[in-house]
Length: 190
Length: 190
Image 1 (cartoon, each protein chain N blue to C red):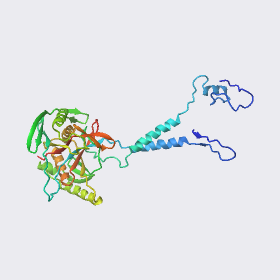
Image 2: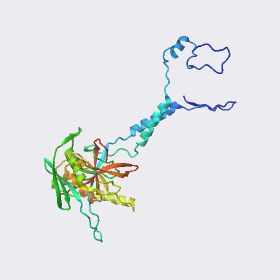
Image 3: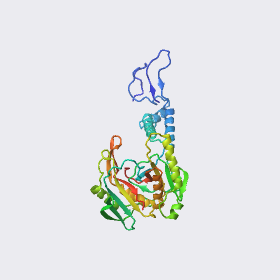
Image 4: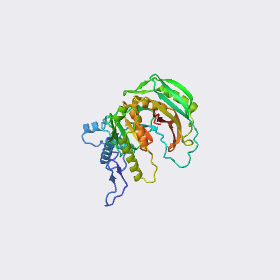
């Protein structure tokens, strides 16, 4: 572009062309910053697409935001994995870790008696805790149908005898819909 | 910086305003950081079972219930599974499936693909409830017989295989047809 003005008077309409950084008095600086025949070293950050991108991230994170927090998983429980699974649900959590049974983190019995007897039997403490939970739910939600869902968080090494005993105890306490908590092993959830 | 030029002069307050983009970007970045920190990336899911406990006794006589075929899965031997179709107490058909473990992942999980394949085949031939859940809310029943000493991870692997056959469900999620397991699993008490 020519650096000479078209006339000695102020031109309200200028010849189209580059304006930015072309009026720096020092010639060598002007040459450097305006490109000097090469590509300019000054680059503008495209702010608008950047804001669009940030807004998309914010919207995605807000959509997947869970105010209820993380699922309470006992550190000592190593869960098995499965493929044909369904999404988690909000229900009382019965964890079997070692010999201890916990309901929502509170101790509710022991598996030692089952192992020693070597036969299927009801865990009385667990039964009472679950029954109380059920009655409390019914008092808080009068007239509503009770789903009877309980989630079992069982370590992968626990014997089937213990699992069946806890399963049966939950059923007797009014929780016939028993789910086992597992890790998702690829594939599509049912 | 972005600005809005709406013209206007004449001694009044300027109507040209610049939107402060940089603080806005800072705010968005803070929001992204907060949401990322509090995000819950849970891989947990559940696998369902049903205790089928009879309800409280009623005065009126129970309805005549049509006996349906049930699939009993015996995992008592070390070398094979036994699939037994029963109608009430009558054995309709017995199939042996080789107990071939396939290790999956690093956690020591196993799968039984041969068993899953056979169950899909059998359900296709003998299953009574294979249509859309919208029209038929009942599920075929599978009963799992397991040794008391079987580890829970093996039990889950077999339940996972039983849940391999899938049926359509157009009422489970709004606006789309999803797949649900064809069977409902319960445990045998013996």
